[in-house]
Image (cartoon, rainbow, N blue to C red; front, side, top):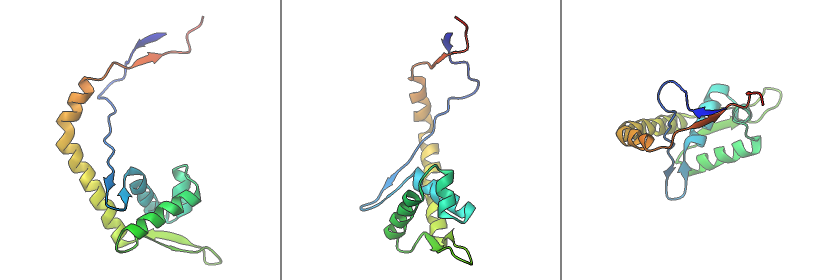
Length: 132
């Protein structure tokens, strides 16, 4: 059955923000990776949670560490004592400031986003459970 969107509540609009520096970029993916490394204490675990290979997660960490004056993530190799990773104070500050910029952009653009939502075509849902 084809019908109109029957969702309750406001549209699920999200603002995604990328900050492009001269030689580096910080966006939602790297911010999420930093957040998850902070939560898990592991680059590998953070990558798994994001369906990302360890190699890709490590590459993003290296990019971030090289882009800023001080590393955002410090890590120790595994072994008998175990390895791990932690978000440094600088990494915590970068994440905090990125989230603050995102929040400010969301607040500043709220009226324009609402106006854009009003211009969207209606969502059509297809119910595949109907018998033929």
